[in-house]
Image 1 (cartoon, rainbow, N blue to C red):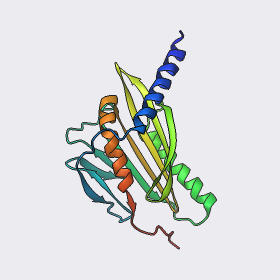
Image 2 (image 1 turned 120 degrees about the horizontal axis):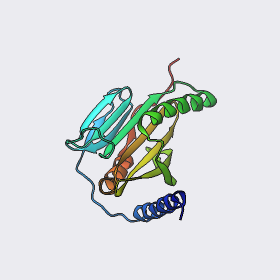
Image 3 (image 1 turned 45 degrees about the horizontal axis):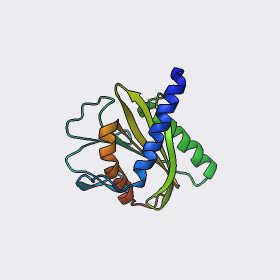
Image 4 (image 1 turned 135 degrees about the vertical axis):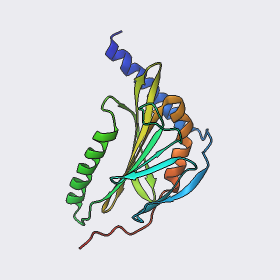
Length: 188
């Protein structure tokens, strides 16, 4: 079997496993505490005792012992206003913001293994689960892009397979309780 076919087969199996794991309620949720964006745009629960760092519109959430390696569990939340009523302009600005964010934080070697839809704070959202082989395991993650008016909102989490699988119920709970606070009206 060629190496490319083998990798695709493994990634397909990972997609099936991710889909099956999404069907069950399984796993426990970490204890959560309230977090409110300093600009007052949103609030959400975050894991207690986790580090939170807001820099350049990116909220980075990580376990207390996080040192910044690719293997470690991390969740990033990116929110930025587009300040426009024009749909075409909003989409163009949102795409520019997303491309810049994803180029910084999502390794191009990841492959999408599952996709779906959900709602986050009553707004439609797109889900992309991704994976890539790493040593004797996999790096897994989930990208959630929320379609809000006047605002770009993205959640991006990743980690080693065992850590990610354990964190996924918490990630889901965080998204379920996420709330947009202000009516995001563009500045005149």
